[in-house]
Length: 449
Image (tube, rainbow, N blue to C red; front, side, top):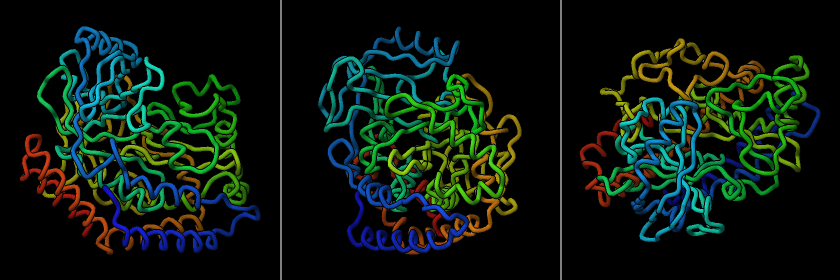
């Protein structure tokens, strides 16, 4: 949602102050720590979308695609996990794009997909220039139609705005009316794809972006790039896994002493601490060490260091898997704010839920899925990072700071109210006003504690 100038100025000062204090708090390295200032400045603009990313209105997207081609595409995905591109006519806010490309997007969100799936409910990646060069809308070529876990998608929309307000790389997000082949429209959240255009908006330096795949982990598998197929996928720049492989080698094989001394030269430790804190503050368990292995790594060509980039917040604020536009699922906010079955509410500090092999109720198994990270619950970078006292303290301080900046200040509730207003005034044909208020109230319970 469009940021309010007063809050934005306060937040900028808060982030700058936090970064200064955070830099002083980390004293385990003689080298120069990787700076967060570039992303803290650029990410803030993400909340101020325009055109197709104007969050003050509900957008309309219709897709016309051959139904037999969709059925064949789903069969291919079920058989091999491959996500084939299809040609489609895509109309966005009245502007029609012929021969646009569409394909399935996601992993765990596709576990319930079958031959009878309604294409309007599926998560899609839309690429306007896939088959027609230079085809774009407002300069953007790629949009992601997210899978819903709630009827309103308020939880992910708010989380992404708060992520940007926290000074971390985020994505534009807009509420949208989606229909495929003339079917009844559904309310879905449409967000940016993390591509070259997104990277240029969020970072001021050249670099490479790598996506951690849901079925992979953060282990070091040797120097052969082929060993990392289906583990990490390079999203931007000329193909080069060398920086990634070197980093994985270091975080897996360095001694504890070398890890503590050299990590600040290889990773933006302040931003990583703030990222870990943020995911806890917005109650999103499906993050870097959650079941979906959800994260990106961005390598800075100037500093040689990495930044962890957040991804996938459709389970933020305690939402359960499935529901909304998720094929075959029933999720949303459990009554009374209770967690889904199998998701413990009280854990020792710093520990993640142990879901076993199947994950929380409704999240296990399926082609293209798999639990991310070793055992689906741990990540070597998170474990080693939080084992260093200075950085563990940095995370705790960041949690306190973010709680004050985002919640105690009233900012989160103001942004939530803006989203509620958009849906109640413009999306009454897609979701009942009562449902909007119920889901907003469930989010407020997390905000107010």
